[in-house]
Length: 414
Image (tube, rainbow, N blue to C red; front, side, top):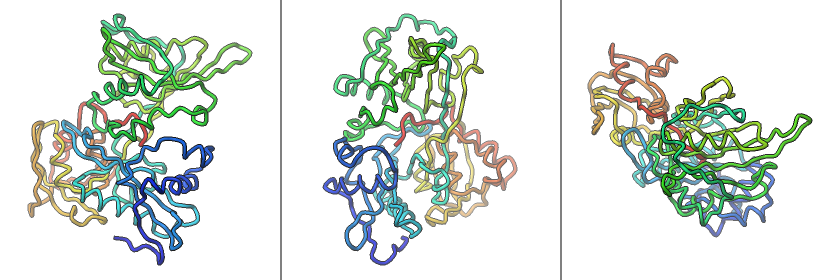
């Protein structure tokens, strides 16, 4: 473990120190909320997993927490994942090793709990690679003109779409049920009471001039099968209404539901543009647009993955085809991961054992994390010089096996 500078110490941050944590966060992530307003909001944190660093006089100057994703989707299976979050250092205490100490503390505690994988959203993407996190998923962000034509999907017209103001008591369980039914790698579920309570916070400071939060719900014979959370922002100019619809989360359980949902969102009165975020690169909307050039598209980094326990993590997921490969992994932070691992797996199961056999592929744990959710090809990493093929032909087979039919994504930032 990294030694902290003299006087600093690692501490638990219980709920009783919530105000101290929020003051620190206002330094690490500047915003417009007053301390009093922030105190009044529900916290998404699991307090038994929240830690920090304090000075000799007890000032909290760094923090980190994690979410207990008990059933995190990985290719073909689900596993326990530690969702690193709320990582911040007071600007007056930077460049002293506090961040590295917290990451190592997070890794140690996650392994102690039996969590073989850590995942995060990176506030600054350049930071986390040096700690072994690899970019494992990207998300699609679109700007679409109102009225953009969509392809027909049989049965979509039979579904009912209702639009309402969001009410946490009325819609919270509906959102949870539809969201948690999705089976896509990386799709973290808000399954703690704290996360679910904080998810639908809707205060003026979060709206950026738009209306209060709305929801469109698609129903099939009374059963919710899709929803979207959105706000409209009214904009007028000399040419008339040019409003913007901002869709913060859209979830559909099948193609009919997706077509019905987007058919409504793309045709709201007085709006000129629909903006989406955090869609999977292969989201149905991308294929339903008749004119894909009508939409401005951008890919952004989504989930980053850190493999904490190589054999446990690789055995926890499934593989698209049969694979029998020896991986030589480098890991400067966790020496227990370093060395050669014999992976034998397929669509039904996988085993991983340490071996002295010659390696077929050489890669760093960071790049193993990138490939872990099935959305980043080992072959693509090899073209960048990040995976080395030592046995001719091994790369192609492993790349196909590690891949997955659905692109990974997480629909919300944690």
